[in-house]
Length: 113
Image (cartoon, rainbow, N blue to C red; front, side, top):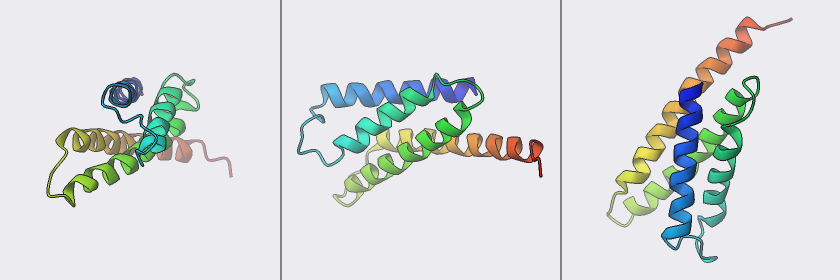
């Protein structure tokens, strides 16, 4: 769980710096709101209590993977490839898969039917 929290914090910082420094904060940027949500969801989920953090982090990482996958493919259609974005997608998908496994195991062991 602590690895997921650290990865969430790192990606949130990377995205926040990108938004602030790269000029991505301009209103014409179609990724502005999704990117801001990436930062907010990851930064908001990382410090949550242990009981709710896995589900919140899972949601934040899946949102992040989706937003950044679209970003990667906007480069692909132009004949380019965004390796940094791809690395962030890979990290988000890896964390989402690990958290999904953890959440599913928790649900099975806490089944009260």
